[in-house]
Image 1 (spheres, helix red, strand yellow):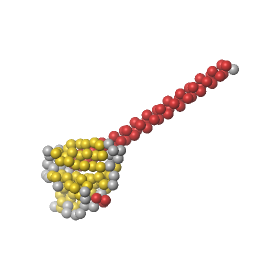
Image 2: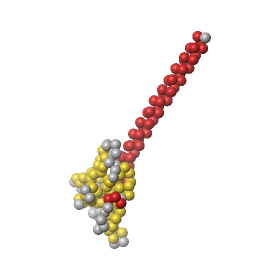
Image 3: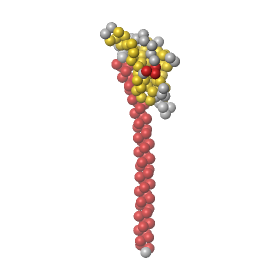
Image 4: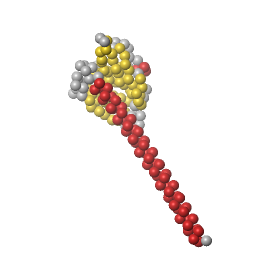
Length: 154
């Protein structure tokens, strides 16, 4: 009888410890997954903006503007003799991109949502653009970009 009780007690302890280790592992996995996801989102926003600046870096094609009170990064391109603008900005909690003909009114709500951000700002310093992204979590990240063709502040 005593031998059976000891075996059952040891088996019970083994089951409890196994469940405890499993719960701890799930917690660690969830934390790691969340941190990885947040880091990916932050780096993706900055990478996307950097690639857009590189793509639009042609003779005077990059400038910053304030459109409707929203800081905006604007790229000017010529297609078939007509100037077009690509605008990057944060609106309604999302990074948005708006492609429109130059001279047309830019309606910020019409931009295509790219990914969630809380805020986005651009500052010109010594020919460089400092891009600061505030994530939905409140964390901020910055990136310095130097367009070869220069940058205009508008």
